[in-house]
Length: 148
Image (cartoon, rainbow, N blue to C red):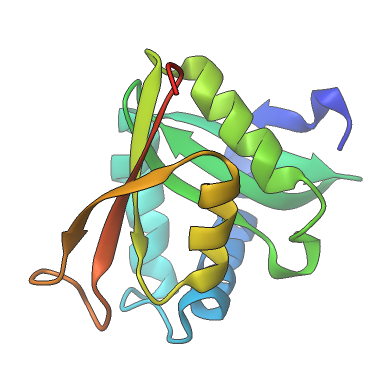
């Protein structure tokens, strides 16, 4: 993926990002997100964007992934199903690490084996399990530290 392909969010990307998000979520965990397209769109615009640094991955003008981070957490990271395995997720994680204060954590569904393997390769380790508040599957908190 060329260097210049991680770009700031643009409003015209909204629907592509939400579609990618919902499709990738369903592919990864095996069940659809509980939010509708419009609810996810509202969440993106009203809550996620104002509270995070956000980058969009593009290949040939196509939105193929995105990441939302704050200085201590990856809030969301998704790569389009058709573009997984091409290094896009790694670029997004590397960018997130570069924005951090030297450590990051994130939550992932336990049933999402491909995401767990991906983050393991990015040197994230399991530090917590939240079985009580999970929707359809327990969630795992994974963490990364620059000192590891």
